[in-house]
Amino acid sequence: MWNTLNSKIILNWEQVKALENESEVTGYKVLYKKNRHSRPNVMETNTTSVELALPTDEDYIIQIKPFGEGGEGSSSKQFTIPRIPGPNAVGSASKVSTLSALSTIALSFTARTSL
Image 1: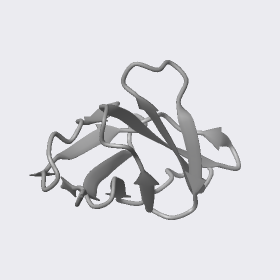
Image 2: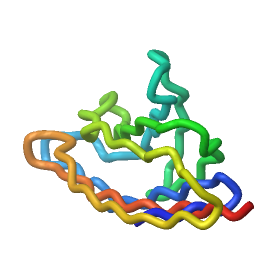
Image 3: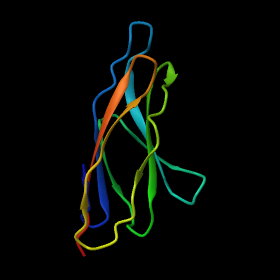
Image 4: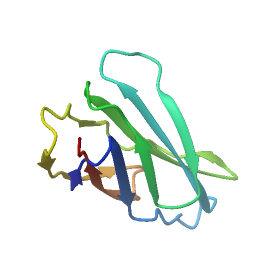
């Protein structure tokens, strides 16, 4: 689910649990970029939630990737936060993306915009 408030987007997801043959997940990389740009910004966190300040003038493409002592895991599928057309726009989205053959991550979004 997402809403917008002051161009901030809050992403929440379920913790990825490592399999017996995998190292423990110690954090996540959130990769985000404007739809027309090729190089993403990267934010690292050790929690399952981040708040991003994203201008509402363009679509944003976002991916989440777990990491641990053994390296990085597979990225979630890319998802798009659409450009917000008006000051009180509200929308919702929920997506489950496979991060590895046996691990999944559920993503939910909250963003609010008030002008």
